[in-house]
Image (cartoon, protein in one colour):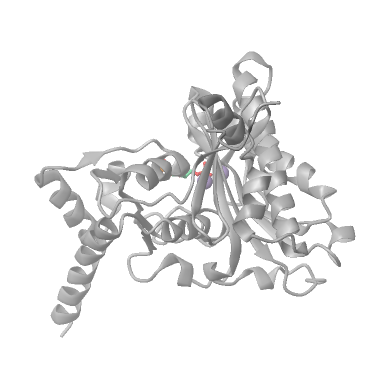
Length: 353
Ligand code: AHG
Ligand code: MN
Ligand code: MN
């Protein structure tokens, strides 16, 4: 019988232990509890992980199958052309949550009104808000895309299905995160106790812990913005862009998928911005299922997310698909963008006398 008292973990033992750090185990460890709420959150995260696996699998074979890529020919509530993958992913989330008994409704970028699961509403204690595929313009060219999710507690029974109780600030989020479908599939989440990343091991069908308590650097070299909109921006944003053009140490990176650009900044620092434009004065990105979940993540990682005027998490929406300008990333880099906005508004006030 081997004496195990002086057992030193070898690489093999380490590898086994690491492979056992699955998402559901991590959620329960995070909450250090087996309470009903903790069990709920673990079950919710497991359902999200299942959705991510199903979408990742479909994406990996998209180019080999009929009618997976391309457009449906429909236009969604956002006024955007809908991709077949948007619809597929939207339905995957509905399917994995329908029988879960956990949620009362699902609010999606792709649906004008939330999808209600009536038999769950009396007991469904949560609402899932999600962007089923973020970065849809990248689907047909096999570049990185993502899914973004936010979980809020159900307050009231919403029997009139007006979903008014969803119109609350981002501090009400219980959990938030995204799945990044890149060279590997990663799931990044927070329950309000740090930001943690998992990598999908397709051979196990499990998301395995990759990084815990991720901290965004206070500054980074990346600025991520679509400079094709330069002519549509306020002068403040134009002056910020001129500043990074003229100062050494900045690199432009912009993929067309918010999740991919955000992931780079979360790990390496910098700032992503989608400011208001002439055509979209409130910006393009949606508050409840794009900006607010990423704002929760970045603040949990020690960074910031702002509209340029106020913290994203403080914004109280007036409607489900409300858009908001987004400046998100390292504290110093977000502050730099805000300084141009602040200087311009001071000059404007002075000129207005
Ligand atoms: P979605 O595919 O969910 O509509 O999101 C696309 C968003 C975001 O992912 C990205 O940062 C931004 O649109 C890109 O917009 P532009 O093409 O206007 O730069
Ligand atoms: Mn999106
Ligand atoms: Mn989308």
